[in-house]
Image 1 (spheres, rainbow, N blue to C red):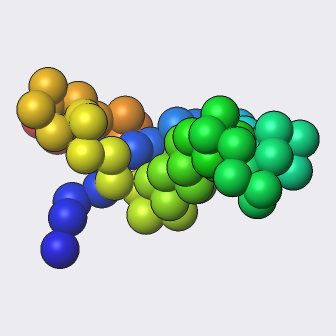
Image 2 (cartoon, rainbow, N blue to C red):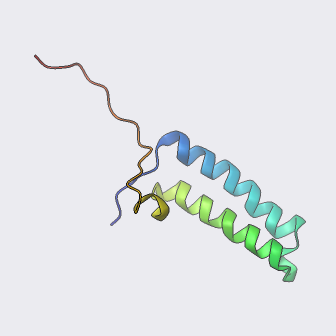
Length: 77
C-alpha cells in the first residue's frame, strides 16, 4: 500500500523512543485516568511505535524524505 520511507536506524529509534513515551504517557502522566497531557504523550508514543513497525512516515511524504539506506554495489564498467 505505502512505500517504506524509514530506514533501519530510523525505525529502531522510533520503536525505542515511542515505547518509552507511550508507557510514560499512560502510567506516569495519568493517560489512563483522563489527563490530557498523558493522553497526548501516549498518542505520540503510539504513532512513533506504529511508524517504526510499518516503516512508513506520512510526514516524510510532502518533503520527499527517505531514510532508507542506499544499497552499495560494485560499479559496472
